[in-house]
Length: 321
Image (cartoon, rainbow, N blue to C red; front, side):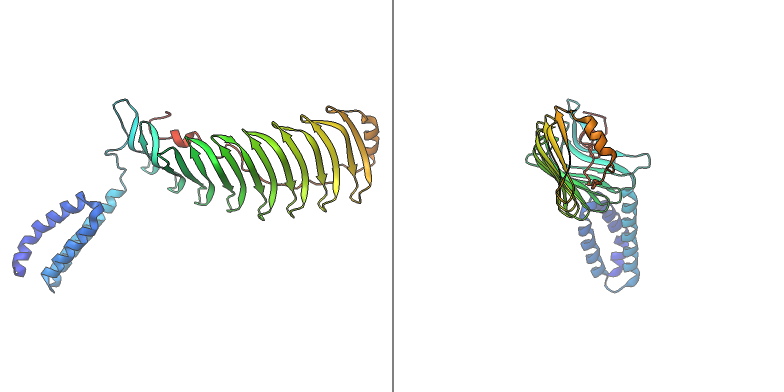
């Protein structure tokens, strides 16, 4: 076939390529192969090559323009019972994507994503174990990681890690089906441990320890069903003992002894279930002492409420489930 026959056929070929490209956008690699074959058939005639190349560029441009328009076909559907099914998307008033996720019988499956108004990813959830669990990543608005963890049946589970806006690990927590259950650790920005504690069904239970940012212990105590119970010790930044005492169901009890840093006794307080028995004596002593000689070191924990567990499962178009 000579070049004049090919030229006469070009408009028909272009129309067919156009329809093929639009209807098979995901298969654009095949389009490039077809165009390559046409280029080869046309030989070295630059006019024909430039004509087809320009046409291909126009097709690509039109496809790009179409991608900026929210896709409303075949999304946000419900089944015969009115339950969400398939792909759901939510856009803001400017056409920017805020939410996308897949559903089956009103339950999220496979993949769920939330976006900030600036287009940055806010939450990314990948479902597994027959969609009973989701590996989840939360991000700050600048794209930095905020938290990672697992949801099982839409409840926090296993190990969760929380980060500050600078990327430093704030804390790790152990969860079991929506309850804090097990070991939790808080960290200073230098990476050293700030506190260690244990939970049982959302209540503090077991050893509780705090540390200065040097790693030296600051306090050691125990909890029982959410209340301080048993011996407690406080330390100076040097590691020397500062105070010893007892708690009985969150109430100061028995004798509390306060030490100078050299180990000598400063004074003693006598308690009975939270009531100070030698108050007058202590008031006289404390008049001669500086208040708050020991500054408490600060450590950080991720604030509850920063991660909205309920919204991420329900913030799809159509309101709450």
